[in-house]
Each structure stands twice: as structure tokens, then as C-alpha cells.
Length: 170
Image 1: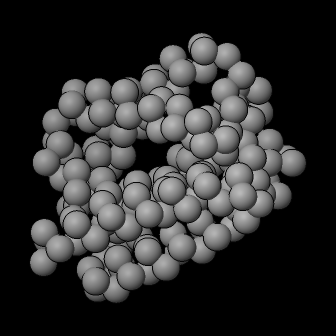
Image 2: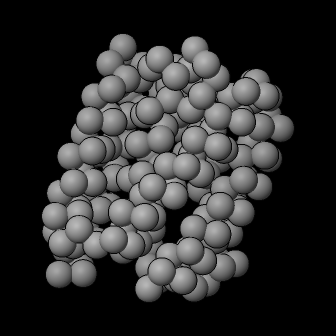
Image 3: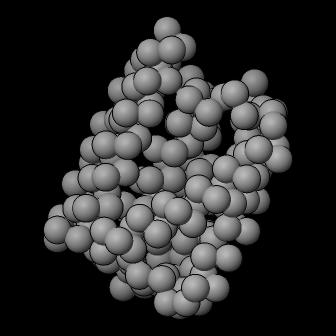
């Protein structure tokens, strides 16, 4: 079953990521989060509502709320779509991306969960690349190139920390 959940999580997260990013531009910023909720609920059903998975999703959403809201508050990132951007808070669609990514960390990325330097590099490189893709789609704008450095640092720190929590929860 572990291989099936890995495939489900990778495909499900990619679909939800794309829906979140594109629907924020297409004027329907809540379609991606709705799809992500369905994705998460199906995942939780498959793993029989594993408490660890629920905790990790919650912690990832809190991390996303703090990190992406700070980037918005300090004017490094301008998000498109959703009511929360009026208050300089991370929009629901980006929080949904954090939630979906956390499930991918649990199963699809389990081979690097104890390799903290590799997970640091994964976050350090992958985090800014993901935001760069969002810029190309038009779901957000980056106000300065220095923002990418800050994103690399933030993601380079948060990915290993999330893995550390995952490892301590097992």
C-alpha cells in the first residue's frame, strides 16, 4: 500500500498545486483549496485517519501562514486571489499548497526524511523554484530578487524542521 499512497500523494499534490496556482489567476481562488481538501480527506481515508498525518498537515498550514504572511506583510510577495490578501495574510490557496506538500513529505519523500542536509537542499532550491513558477503563472509577484534568497533560507530551514517533527512523531 505504501507505493500506492506515494503515487497518489505525488499526483494529487501536483494537481492541487496547479489548481491552486491557476485558479487564483482565473478569478476562482477557492477551487484549488476545495480540491486540496478532497485530496487530503481521501489521503486520510486511505491511511485510516492516521493522527500523525493530521498533525503534520496542521503544522504545515501554521508554518505556511506564518512564513507566507510575513513575506506579504513585509512587502516581499504580492499574492493574487482570495479575501485574506486584503489583510496581508497568506491566501487559502497557498496554505492549501503547504498542506498538500506536507502529505508528500510523509510518504513520497520519506527517503530523505532523516537526511537533513539533503532536505535542507531540497527546500533551499525547491522552495524558490516553486514561487518562481507561481510568478510565471501570475498567481503572485516577487517584489525584489532578494526575496528569492529569503525564500531559500526559509524553506531550507522549514523542510528539515518538518522532517524532524515527522521523525519524532513515529
